[in-house]
Length: 99
Length: 336
Image (tube, rainbow over all chains, first blue to last red):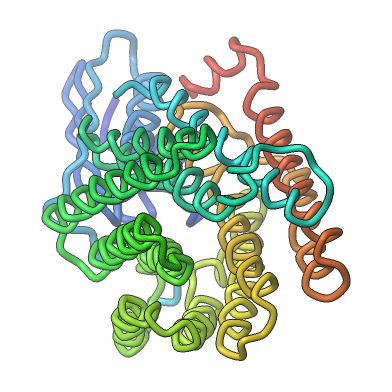
């Protein structure tokens, strides 16, 4: 499973309030893949977001389901650096009026 | 704290919702309920029910076991009130708000921002209201500031996705400062709430997501309808119109509409259950807002029963949607 495969999976994980994927919203900070292992770092717009753990679990479950059996999947929530709107995809930036 | 362990806390809050709502109805029509539920309708609805639910959500976000002392104290406080131990109940609500305030401080330290500061100010307003309640003084304006700050803080957070000129955020900061002090003068609070409603109607993410479909659109409809009643409630306070109409425009039209929109997003996060979108969710929402119009314009008792029916129907719809899928299907969805 390579980085693009992981991105495809993360396109299916939506922030329910925004109606867009965590990838488009720029909440995914990093994807590292090696044989038998996937690591993802992501954030939320706010530390007060009660959906944070839920979205992390959803992302991990979705990657696990798409990865070859036995792949070790780790999705970590990080707060530093804080999220900024520049991280959004061109599509998201267009929808929300940034470009 | 495992998700299912949160369920008893939620249930505790719902005890206060059931008796608090029944107590409100008993003020308007013949209904056999405990005298405490009639006398303490406000504290039961605000500090016992919403206090439990909101502080439970905050504890889940924080992920610290001690933060669950807030929903536990608020929920038990409601039970104390119902059993006739008013002072003990009020004291537990002060304790709940104090823990909630500390949770707010931890969040600000985790990420200092206007958003987290607004949520902290909301916690302080809840504590102020509960302290006044314990002293036997009017708490409602402070509770209104609690909801306005808590909801607006979370909405500001989500509106960061949108490009807005800097003055929009600066204007919000001014509103937050005014919300902290204006409850001392209810008419001033009314004006601030009306301006906040205008801010939210103009700049909230819901203005964009109302053009989406399914869940994002439904949530946006709940929010925008709620902001309308926030404006009505604020203007009602400002103009010193009917107290019943102003308070219920705020607490039912604004706050419960938020709950209707927020539940499908938040219940999966807090309880790890599926809450699939279904268009039937619009039915309780429509009844809620129509019955509020009846309450304000036609008949208070008729409108109040409609309000209660909308809330009961929403709970029934939510239970149906959450439980209707069989476990195999849920398992498949979970590993999607």
